[in-house]
Length: 154
Image 1 (tube, rainbow, N blue to C red):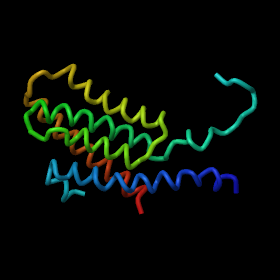
Image 2: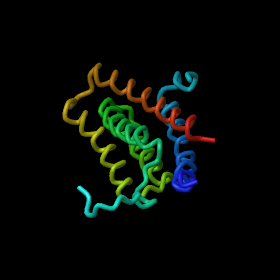
Image 3: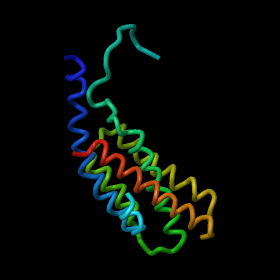
Image 4: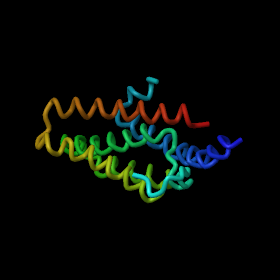
């Protein structure tokens, strides 16, 4: 009985996940049309974390997707795709629809920035390697969004 009660806060997070996974998947598939066809404890008493601090079961994939979006945002702009803020907007939309608590939101944004900076430190001009990395990250992002949606969607 206790496990059911502890899992209850996660149901709301799963619903939020549904609202963002599909738009992110669509954005990623539009970027690569071929993908659309592929499928220290303060006291000694042990207390569970408050519901607001519980992580969704899909958080590791969500954090990776945040990082991937940051990388795509940098690489696609570097290579002149003229998409403007498309990838930053996709991330903002994902955060808005997920409605994370402040610490979780900060982690998502930090991962986006980490992905951006990883390539900002390596590439100053568009090269064939940068284009290849961009393509691979779009594919990975589509996979992550699809996995999240399939596993935690309706």
